[in-house]
Image 1 (tube, rainbow over the protein chains, first blue to last red):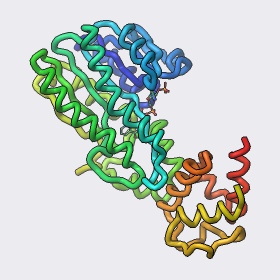
Image 2: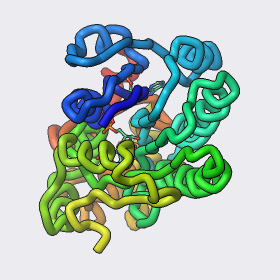
Image 3: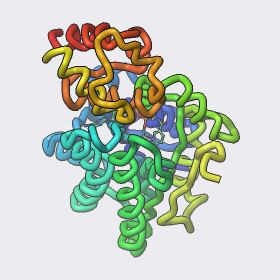
Image 4: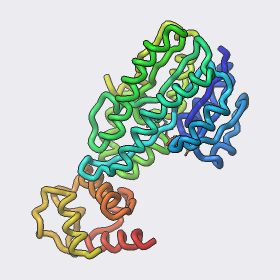
Length: 237
Length: 78
Ligand SMILES: NC(=O)c1ccc[n+]([C@@H]2O[C@H](COP(=O)([O-])OP(=O)(O)OC[C@H]3O[C@@H](n4cnc5c(N)ncnc54)[C@H](OP(=O)(O)O)[C@@H]3O)[C@@H](O)[C@H]2O)c1
């Protein structure tokens, strides 16, 4: 496999695992994250470039697009998950969640296409979540943002097919990560244990997601577009 | 912020507790409606109404509403 891949959210648990793995499959990676500190300490053989970009700002988005090389693939693994029952959902959290999880992938694809940075035949992979298709207390904002992302991905898949550009989502279940640690901090031990029991293959690790991402980036999946692939240890069976 | 107001906010968050039945000495973790949803809801209420982020473990570290109120106060002022 070969090609130049931009990994957005490379400073996160899942994005970091993806970025570390892709060079071993023959891809060249450009890493992006919000935190300069975390990005600087990432040491990944085969990483061509690092771009610090806070995607809550327009300047951040523009900087990312301007600094990106020409791409054969994009992995969008940035995300936020505010957890609150709807009676206490903060408007600012709801907006930030939709902005980063659902709007930003579209705006970035738009800007990268306009800047002619996405090559013909490229593959775009968005990190969605099992939450997009399953109701859970406290997840209204996050689930809604991921369902919106999946719906948008299907439209992009149709729209960009004439250029041979494929657009797919991966929907992980609970993966041990900074994000799930945030969930654990808000949940009682009983609730966590009950949730973990809903995974026939147990709770996942960030490495458990990378193979599916690499497959969707590769030519092995050249006839697959517009799908959401669950990678969830059987949670949604 | 007052203890009385805090208790009202707590009662409102947990629901299923009759308003006015709790006081500072109440051991909230022994209340019948104290379950995982109540934990999540109280954490979200404290964030939305008090600007304080507590963890489930913090809620376990206190017993009475008075003690929880004192913990919240330390976070508000810090
Ligand atoms: N963990 C799970 O259980 C799980 C399950 C299903 C789906 N997912 C999805 O998988 C993806 C990765 O999750 P994760 O577990 O790796 O989360 P994580 O460890 O919390 O990482 C989140 C990433 O998003 C980045 N980010 C947050 N706000 C940003 C902003 N304003 N601008 C730019 N980047 C920003 C972070 O950058 P910095 O660290 O540099 O600030 C970090 O790279 C997310 O889309 C998440 O929704 C996760």
